[in-house]
Image (cartoon, rainbow over all chains, first blue to last red; front, top):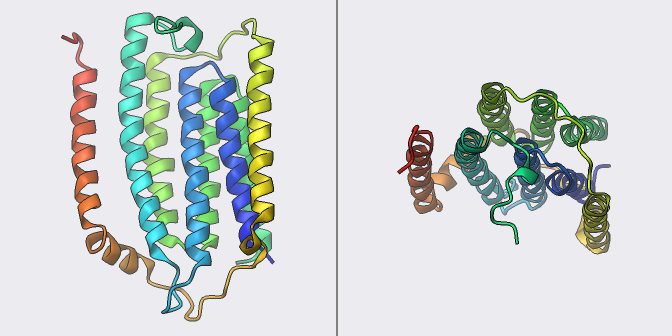
Amino acid sequence: MVTLGDYLVVSGLLFTIGFAGVLLRRNIIIIFMSLELMLNGANLSLVAFSRFRLDSLGQPNYHGQVFVFFIITVAAAEVAVGLAIIVALYRARRTTHVEDINTLKF
Amino acid sequence: MSPFFFWLFSALMLIFGAAVVVNRNPVASALSLVVCFIGLAALFITLDAFFIGIIQVLVYAGAVMVLFLFIIMLLDLRAEERRRINFLAFAGGAAVAVIFFFQLYAVINHLAIARLPFPALPHAPTDDVHSVGLLLFGNYNLPFQVIGVLILVATIGVIVLSKRELR
C-alpha cells in the first residue's frame, strides 16, 4: 500500500536533487532547470496532501490543487523573465558560467 | 492507485531528475527534464489530480521546455569544458544537500499521518476541472486576477529586456 509518507519522501528527493543542482552546477541554464525541479518537488507534496485530506463530500481538498495551479503559472512567468535575463547576460558577457560573472562578489 | 505505477513513475522521475544535474551537455539536460516532468505528471494522475497532470504536461513539458531548448540553441551552448573544480565548495554543497534530505526524512518519519495509506474516494473519478474552476473563480478570484497582471508584467519585462539597447 502506498502511504502519504512515500509521496512525501519522493517529493523531498526531487527537491534535494534540484537543490544539489543549484549548489553544485556552474552553468546558469542548468541552475535554472534545477530551480524548476525544486518547484515541482513542492508541487508533488501539495497534490499528495490534497488527495490525502478528503473534504465532507468525500472529494479531494481542491485548495491544494488551486495552489499548485498558481505555482505553475508563476513558474512559467519566472522562466520567461529568467531566460530573457540570461540572454541579455550572454550578449553582454559572452558566457553562461557563473564563476565568470562575479562583479557583485565580495 | 497501484503501488507498481507509483514506484515505476517515481523511479523514472528521480532517475531523469538526477540526469538533469549530472549531464554535461545542456541539450541532454533539457531533454531529461522533459521525461522527468512527464513522470511527475503521471504521479499527479495516480493521485487523481487529472487537471494538474494535464496542465503539467502542457505548460512544463510543452511550453517551458521548448523555451529552454530554444534558448540553449540560440546561445549555441556546447558541452561545457572541464574546469578545475573547487573541491571544498563541491564537498560543502553536496554535504548540505545530503544533510537537508536526511533532516526532511527524519521529520517525515516522525509524522504519524505519513504512515497512513490514502483514503479511498467514495465516488469514483471526480470532475476535478469543475471543482478546481469553481474554487479558482470563487474563493481565489482576486489571486487569479493578480496572476493575470503578473503575467502581463512578465511579458512587458521580457520585451524590455530583449531590446538591443537598454537605456
